[in-house]
Length: 334
Ligand SMILES: O=C(O)CCC(=O)C(=O)O
Ligand SMILES: [Fe+2]
Image 1 (cartoon, rainbow, N blue to C red):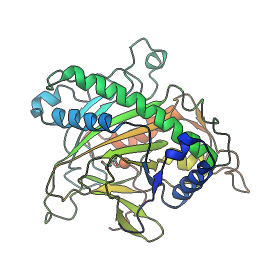
Image 2: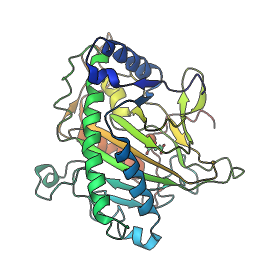
Image 3: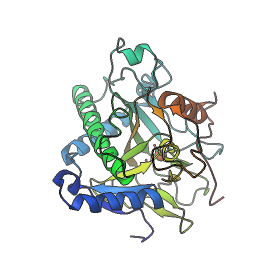
């Protein structure tokens, strides 16, 4: 493993709640400052649930294209469902990213007050009926989504401590959150193809934290600001690759990093991954956290989660031809 890779951090001390927790807090603080990325092991998500999510995901992507298109994310108005190959294009190239996806969230009824108010990311799910086990797909995705919210809240509690704040300081932020599960499938790309081909082009995430489950294929890379190189994020069975998004960077007045990452899958086999994006309550106002100010104050004005996410999302998917830009701050290897 490259020593410049994001660190692997044992989360067990969080649950033990003894003196080892201070060490965990220090490790996460360091990772947030230096990488904006780390891998988390010994968290509370059962392996069987992770395996079931990946299995149901692969069964969905195995369906014929015309079946998958019935669940297209562009229909229904809640940004749930299928996104076809090359519908995103993070590095402004002609062909688009070589991946297809399926968006799920908390399955909310149409009369939920946040849905009525059209708050970002809130709405009902689409569940495919043509998969081999439609009832299992639904049950597993819903159960996984709930479990991931719990883990996200735990990680936010530790992040609060890394900033010298009370463990529960983010509890209002974590209530009724924007929390998006994205099933992803990357076909293998040719090893000798144009070196511009990407599974997902270099970008930063725009929410608070992302927790990514990846299979054992490999291909995810993160930009290391200190050594100025792309480093692999080597798959660790069952681990979550956790990274901070732009909202967290803004919230901490740039103290914590939201780093560039990309996927290039030249493994010769298809790759599956499942990022979970946690971005907090849409009505919550993000303003510089206490202790993070510069001598002159905060670098960014306050903004609600809803406003922030709506603006960032428009940047990413905003063009009608799908050739969107995303959050590309620099092109380190251009
Ligand atoms: O699939 C991966 O490993 C990365 C996915 C990702 O970066 C994203 O969906 O924002
Ligand atoms: Fe990402």
